[in-house]
Amino acid sequence: MAAIDPVTLAVIQSGLQQVCNEMDLAFCRAAFSPVISEAMDRSDGIYHRDSGELIAQGELGLPVFVGTMQFSTQAVIERVRADRVALEEGDVFIVNDPYLGGTHLMDVKFVKPFFYRGALWCWLANTGHWPDVGGIVPGGFSANATEVEQEGLRLPPVKLYKRGALDREILAIILSNIRVADQRIGDIKAQAAALAIGERRLTALLDRYGADTVERAVGELKARAAQQMRARIAAIPDGTYQGEAFVDSDGVVDEPLRIAMRITKRGERLTFDMAGSSPPCRGPMNSVLATTRSSIYLAIKHVFPDVPINAGTFEPLEIIDPDGTFLYARYPRPVSGCAAEVSQRIAEAVFAALVEAIPEQLFAAPAGTSGNLSVGGYDPARRRSYVMYVISGGGYGGSARGDGISNGCSTIGISKTTPIEVMEQYYPVLFEEYSLHEGSGGPGAQRGGFGVNYRFRLRRGEARASMVMDHGRYGPQGARGGRDGGVNRVRIVRGGAEYRPPHLSKDQGIELAAGDVVEVSTPGGGGFGDPRTRAPDLVARDVARGYYTRAQALNWFGVSLSDDGSVDAAATARLRAGPA
Image 1 (tube, one colour):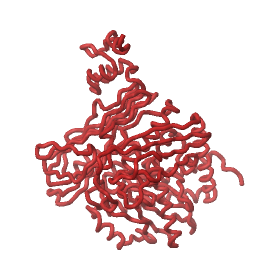
Image 2 (cartoon, one colour):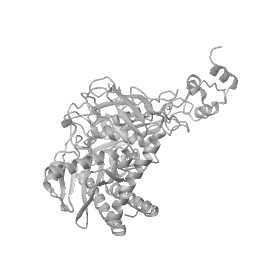
Image 3 (tube, one colour):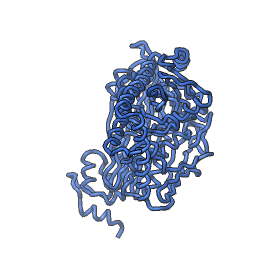
Image 4 (cartoon, one colour):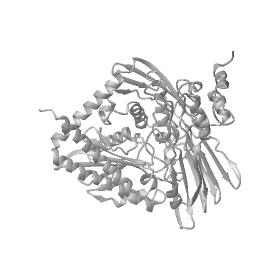
């Protein structure tokens, strides 16, 4: 069989990518919920008909879904085979079960068999973060949950659409168990419409190049991605590298959870062992296996961003199942924090392990929290209930190439804070501050980026606030002598009295009344390299911009500034020289 010429291969690769991109755009443009339409907490992809392996994913999709969506597609395939489920054109499965290749319950997957000329050719799938799936608190982020049933409605793979028709009985069960049900139907139809767009675009691609040619291209692209990843791994010195990261607490027991990462590099393979991590926890910071694996995938993709994304990318990575730890959750362990928070600690442990091996390609730890905050209540002016969901950015870690970005997306995705004007339009809140979290960037030769401060006031009615965040106890790790970034802080003012969560950045069901205020400061990234080797003029510039105080410049960077803000070179030299 003749090889596919490079031009055709490149065009087909771009065509598959474009199919996914159009699904992404259709989904976010049609979705009702701002968390999908504005914050873009969703993803779309194409998966192999037999193995469920990733073929292509949209560029606008969240990286954490790269692994989990192929695992949830595999769960659908296994259900179809085990129960001998008949597949027909127009069928769409819905699933959000964390233990079946999922994340947390709010990430709802739609999986659709794609037929070409009467034969199953692949699966199309997408994920959307629903603002609510029931459970003990609005928004699903129950910081004190001790079993998954408290977190919301759990759906095994079932057909929500049958031959293109929405199953009204299953829909009724779903809508009867979630808040603001009338608004979810808009997200459901948007999610299904995105798959329909993908169906049309993929059909056109197959019509143009032929199913056999495209299938051969898929195989070639997988092989090339594996080859590229093996080449990147081969450049890492052989050896065993260790790193660790800590989750503040599980929300129930106020003790940190340790992730112990041991990476062994031999030839063209990396092996990941997390056996020394903390045991399963009582609260919702357990991680299901699919999320744990996907967290390692996304971490390595951060290290080697030029390798294309498909199933071949992950072939050289061997992950030892962390059985007996909180990173391998089984039913009924609660898991609402796994995708948004624990996944980022796993990635942070990977970065910490590899930074000593390949420092020029690594960086200090990023903010590493999605800052999940949900507020649910009743708006008396509009006479309707609501659930507001806030994702917040933070600082990136410094690197050998320069300072970290401020207010960047989380490690696991591209989701950004919904524009505050949109939230004020949808919900009875008024944002009174949105600014840089000054001083939060970890000191280093290349400093970390800064987190953000935001503050909003409930304008009317009553509500309940819940949050599952992290890095409130420990800031993001510095690297190569750099210092840790600033921590996450939460402060709530109710009736004039201040309240701070006992677990620092995890709490649930906090009652709010009109006039009450919620304040959040997100973490900054870790610093890279010895802070006392940072160019003094850069420290002076940071102080002039308000990023650091004069005292911080003196104590952290060893830079003395004159009254006019310029560097006092003699005093700085004495400070940096240390004791005589």
